[in-house]
Each structure stands twice: as structure tokens, then as C-alpha cells.
Length: 207
Image (cartoon, rainbow, N blue to C red; front, side, top):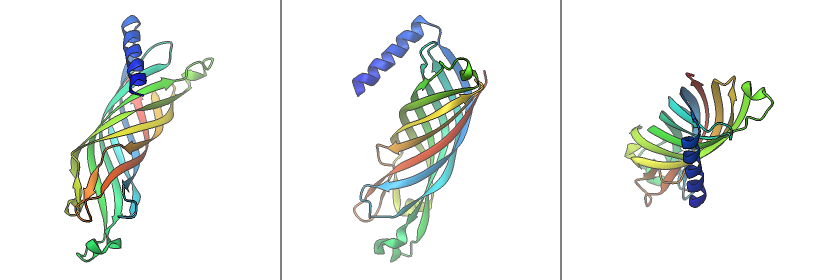
């Protein structure tokens, strides 16, 4: 898999050198629907909650083949509701339902494919797919710090589909899953949890 991704990256760079790459910059914002997934599934019940993100995105596309890359710098807020009252270790301390909030600086980097051979219809609606890693740097968190310890940097992988409207606005929906832990409990053998996030974003390009 690593060799395959490296081959694609080298091909994209080589193509960009030999032909004029199309670059754009835009503003992006969206909503997130996040849940914490614990490795030991019965340790702590978690409910998904809404959050959001906003920032800027740059895109580089190779003309004629539909492939390219994009990278973003986002502020992202992901929430999850945790039912500490289900376990005696916490309920005995008077801890009930708490909202775990993660404030991240996210850096997603995607390999993107846009299907543009639609006999001119792509100027109105152009379908696309994307996938890539996301580096998340923790900028702040909720008062759940009394029950949880938070990882300062975490890694996720995201993938999804979308479309470009009128060559100006991109709308995409996707799923992001943590491959590294996001937090861990301070009690009950420090069980680790990872974020699982659905997201919907819209990006407006300045040119």
C-alpha cells in the first residue's frame, strides 16, 4: 500500500513538472458528527454529537487526467457524550454524563480524483472522490480532563465523495477514523479511545 501511494505521489509530481498544474485557494466550513470509540467496547458508553470546522484549503490538479491533491488548515471542534454514570468507578465519585470536546488544528492532505469527461456537464456538476491522512494537533479540550487524558497529536485517515458545482464550489461528505488514540480514561486500566467522525464540508474557491 505504501509503495502504491508513493508511486502515485511521484507520478503526480512528475506530471506537475511537465505540464502546467492548476492551483486554487478557497475557504471551507462544515459540520462534524463525532463519536468516541473505545477499544474495550463495554468500558464506557458514548453518544455521537455535532461539531464543526472552518479554515482554508489549497488544491493542485493535473490537467487532463483528473487527479490532484488538496491540503487544508482547519480549526475543528469534535464532541462526544460520555456516560460515566454507567460505571461504579465514576458514579461513586458523583460523575455523570459529560461532554468530551476536542478543539483541534487539523491538517488533512487528500489524493483527489475528479471525473470530468461528461460532455460539458462537468462545468455544472463534476463528481469527485478523495482519501488521505489527517494530522490533528490538540489546541484545547473540555473539563472532562478530570476523567480523561488527551493526546496532543493524533493521526486519522479520511475518505469520501462529493461534487464541484459551477467550477466554483465543492461539496463533500466523508468519514474520518482515528488510527492513533485521541484520549484515554484515567481509571479502569486507562482504556484508549479514538474519534470516529462523519463530516460535511463546502468550499468556495476564490478563482
